[in-house]
Image (cartoon, rainbow, N blue to C red; front, side):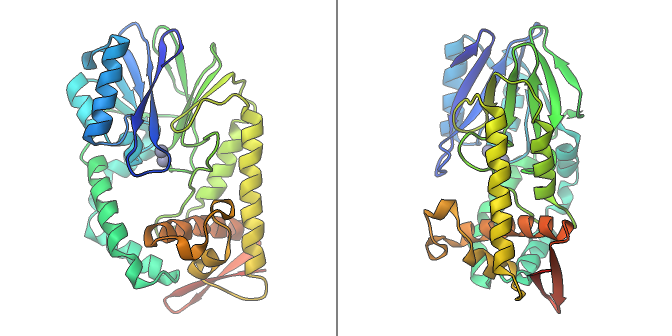
Length: 328
Ligand SMILES: [Zn+2]
Ligand SMILES: [Zn+2]
């Protein structure tokens, strides 16, 4: 789909995922085309991408730069394959590149640490196997690909036709970026801002980090951007950026309020807290969630709990190997 002359959106299918598609974007330049995001690494997505590329009248070799908004496998998955076919350089934010460069860490040790950390937050043992197999499969795609370039906040990529300004928006992923084209007032928002779904903000390991705090700050960073078209990595194009930012801020405020309410006067672990709060706007109950979704719910609750702890609204209590949270 042509968005404006010289900028195309290609939807690649995302199998077994309610999001349905990953939107990738092709941007014309004088020395070749820039591709933003690559899609999930399977045959169906690859065929769809190849087909649409040809339809636009382009060949893989016409792509000279691949920019990935963040290293989640639906965005980064096909990077290796497309890099081989096109000879393009691969670029992502320096923080995401560091995560890949440290990929030796992502061996057995990190899986064990994650399990231990999940246990300390009350996740039962039977929640592990299925999730870990899925997780191992997807991270191997990511860590076999070496990026050529690390992008910095504020840097501008000049294609000759368009200027793409890098905006570092940590939260959904530590090195997530959005790209802003000031002349046409376009914002490539990755997974940072989606028009309908609230992007998942999770803590994934036992390190002192505050991804939700980062995310909320990254949202506020975009408040003053003059945007005509929002080009997200999933769902459809959107136009009202201030309204969407306001909705997302309100959603997280509401969730924080709900969490505080559940730990008034009584300390609970993250798993039990998760079982008490509303998921997917009440469309699904805790009992209906499978082990993987429950674990995602727990990592999301932990992001809210840690943000609340930084705001000094709740405290974290360590009892032996177990972690609890309580409102102050
Ligand atoms: Zn993502
Ligand atoms: Zn995504």
